[in-house]
Amino acid sequence: MNTLHFRYAVEIEKTRSITQAAENLYMAQPNLSKAMKELENSLGITIFRRTSKGVIPTEQGVKFLECAKKILIQIDNMESISTPARQEKRRMRVSVPRTAYISKAFSDYISSSEYPEDMEIYFCETSSMRTIENVRENNYNFGIVRLNAVHEKYFADFFAEKNLESRLLWEYEILAVMSAEHPAAEKENLTYGELSANYTEITQGDDAVPYIAGAIERLYSANRPENTKTRRIYMYDRGSTLDFLLTVPQSFMLDSPVPENLCGKYNIVQRKCSFQDNCFRDYIIYTAGHKLSDSELALVNKLYEVRNELAFNKYI
Image 1 (tube, helix red, strand yellow):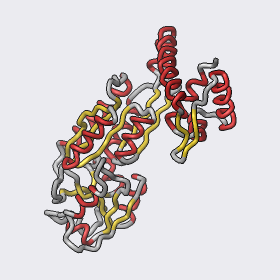
Image 2 (cartoon, rainbow, N blue to C red; image 1 turned 90 degrees about the horizontal axis):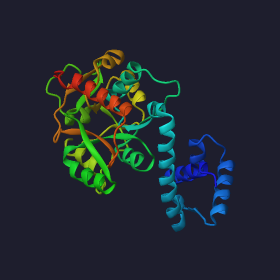
Image 3 (cartoon, rainbow, N blue to C red; image 1 turned 45 degrees about the vertical axis):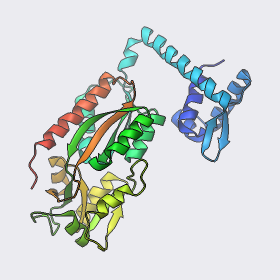
Image 4 (tube, rainbow, N blue to C red; image 1 turned 180 degrees about the vertical axis):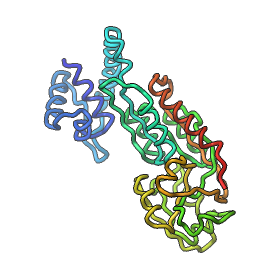
């Protein structure tokens, strides 16, 4: 019995897709399917079955996978005894919101550290709910979840349900971010209601709150004048959002504070913006019992360093 096939099976369980698992394992799909067939024949069971929700384990498959994971942990522990340097190799998966200060912390972390030649890091910018899925189901080391304080209880319950631990990274008020050429760039006492009624808002379209549909839209609607016609562009790429702010001067977005070097690069400004329930929090999440490695802690420390740089800035 080839224990390498155990790793293949565990990857299929994580992705619920033989195609995606093959891609993650850098192998051809027919070869992965053949390996799974060989494993099932040697065990005399069917490990996976196809459903409308993807490839999922059978009842016998669940029991096999539980045993396989324990065996793989023991194999990794044995290998680490003979090759201690293995623990220093950078193998990290991080899932975060699309926001500038986190990106800066990540780039600072990479540029300030010395790495072995075989570094492999995944940096995924996505929604909070997808980050929870990545950490819980897709073997990400840790993630960062963004939420509004009024929704914190729902997220806390969801973390507990998913067996996740959380640590507060930053509590802040969102700012209005716009081009320095924006008509409202020099105005004082800005309100979200005024901006959304007169200008085009760029926003992420995949925000959600556990258990309550439409919570995010209700939060923003409460801050807009009644019957206001809104102009919103939903974008899913942070770089494109910044380019859009630069090329469409009458657009704006709400975000956590942006590093000054990025403001200069894109010729953007950030202003205080009156917003009901303007208390947002970013949480670091990881599976319960997970102990952050030295490399993970180094990245977390960079996150706190950049947060501290921005937290003491004055915004008008």
